[in-house]
Image (cartoon, rainbow, N blue to C red):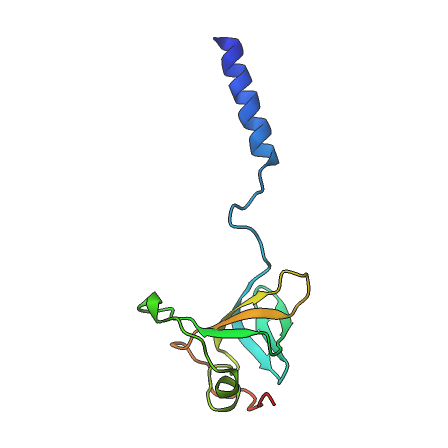
Length: 126
């Protein structure tokens, strides 16, 4: 009985040591406030300042931080950059980079119910 208990404890310790520390995985996402916006990059403060490149493959969705999560929808990048304050300095965003190890944004979630101070750049993607 004691041998079996010691064997089970040793087995649990070995399996526990081989599993990753985080079950969710770390895809190096950044959640924070925008500090700078240009036509091809977004800089976010998330424990440190990080700059992500955006391109025509980057997807933008609204991020309802209050209320119904079912309201998540795609945002038009042209409308987002040219005619709104959603991507202005101080706006809350979550940026998910591509899985290829680069700092190119794959998906940008914009907290549309917590827009910034309106002082951001008014740049249009052409």
